[in-house]
Length: 377
Length: 68
Image (cartoon, rainbow over the protein chains, first blue to last red):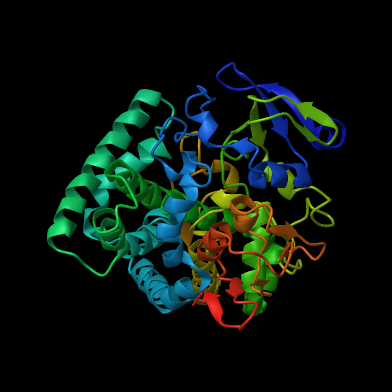
């Protein structure tokens, strides 16, 4: 893959569904694909774009829009996810982290960290933020698994899960219209009803996207961070003895640990001819930004294949960039910081109960999800 | 208009208002021009910035326009 980045940084590839696209692997080029408006997400909707992710067909999704349509939707939710608003949530997240660890201590060893901690935490946080009753999470958990996780291979099942989850939110929106609350869903309903800044389908789609995106992603970054630290025990030791390094360690682990199954970001389509690293990509072509490879480009940082928790901050692309830069990035960072702080601080001798090569991943195509992570402490 | 040190180079503003912002050699985003005519896309960028790092003032009076 390094040779590809060096010698053929923009290369025509056959995608899993047989279509042809351009794989872009250098940091500067990937960043440009993510930011430059000539690489369109909206154009993928009617293009029968390749399905490397589940969100390709959803025209109402915020992930499938370009400015100015995208901007209109993003503005409605951006305020709930700013660094300042997220910081105000930190004490609540710290408390939840401690509650889940308290609960772990009541279980017999080994216990599954996925179910009892790494999935529980982000699900609880996004439910509280949106105003979804967390006690109903068993209802939507299976749908989420179909969309991002275990079963996300069959397009029909993905569509089915999307429509069930949409139905769930349509019912919940009706409830909240009758009984407004102090939560993000109520604020979005007001934006729809009072100001007509959002269609009903967009409102539902936004709720679905926020719930799903706040679900498997952070959960599996917690897992993958622990796997990386387990594989590099000297890094783990440095972090344990220097917890003040946790914020920069989170950035480094975000750069280093691969979240997506493919390592690629959502595909774009060129709206006009664009030249990248001397290669001309004609208009109307599919372009895949290889986020994981870009994060390991020496143009971004020195010794990019080393994990170093003391590395100075990098502008890694794990949250994407441009208008689709992860809306929940600050929230994810904060949750990941508090999760690491809690686990390293209160379970300093935590170890995996099975070897890393015996850990199994769910079958899904989007996020690399561990089925379980049995630990002792 | 200004971009503060809080900038993490998410690139949101670069996508929304590509003529108004540019990435600097320091890895942060800067205005292409500090003094501009009224431009709604810049206000969109202010509202979309995850770090709330962008601010716009009236060039004559210094009064804050956004965030107000």
